[in-house]
Image (cartoon, rainbow, N blue to C red; front, side, top):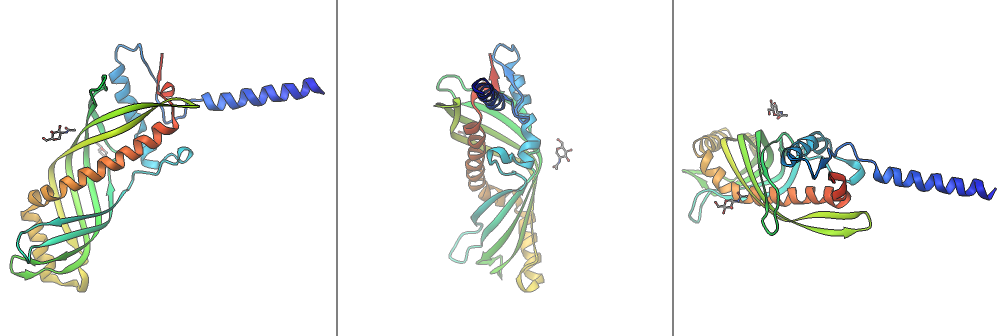
Length: 248
Ligand SMILES: *[C@@H]1O[C@H](CO)[C@@H](O)[C@H](O)[C@H]1NC(C)=O
Ligand SMILES: *[C@@H]1O[C@H](CO)[C@@H](O)[C@H](O)[C@H]1NC(C)=O
């Protein structure tokens, strides 16, 4: 009887360890001794893409398709009647479709650096506007869409380590992100009251000033994206110890 009990305990303990040691499918392991370690880490990041796209419920990582952001506010022309747009309920699609172009690992106090490209990022949002656009009173609301083609994201980040019962974990402390976008296309639709003149004037303005609008949007977009990316990276790193990513 006692022997049986001990056997059951041993099996349970073994099963517990086995589950804890099993490498989750979203991780592609790299060897520290691999002379092409950087390339391996590049591939490991690429390997994560479909999992980022669908989300990883076991570690409560939500899907990044779409990526949801609360709001942004843009002052597009100066003066007391300046034209402003507020964006709300922003959904960003395409972020998981990245290609890792280069990667430099953190070294001592030096940050890690990576360059990602994304062929196409689209943003869908609700907007409200106020002020005067050229000579038209431009108070209105409706749908706002942005299509960014040829996106390059340069990312620099500082990481720290912390000890947990599961082992040593990495943590992203600071993330700096710069976007460069080759071709922005911005438009509005479904304007409140279906005001055709305002719709056309706004779209003409957005078409002719796409790069300027993007410049106004960019600092806030970069800040929000880097905060979101930090959250995603830390959700993953907090759940998976380093020894799962890199083995000796
Ligand atoms: C993802 O990127 C590839 C090229 O790298 C492109 O062909 C494909 O259409 C993209 N898919 C989405 C959903 O954006
Ligand atoms: C972003 O651009 C600024 C200004 O050009 C630069 O100082 C910073 O190092 C850049 N960050 C990244 C991650 O490339």
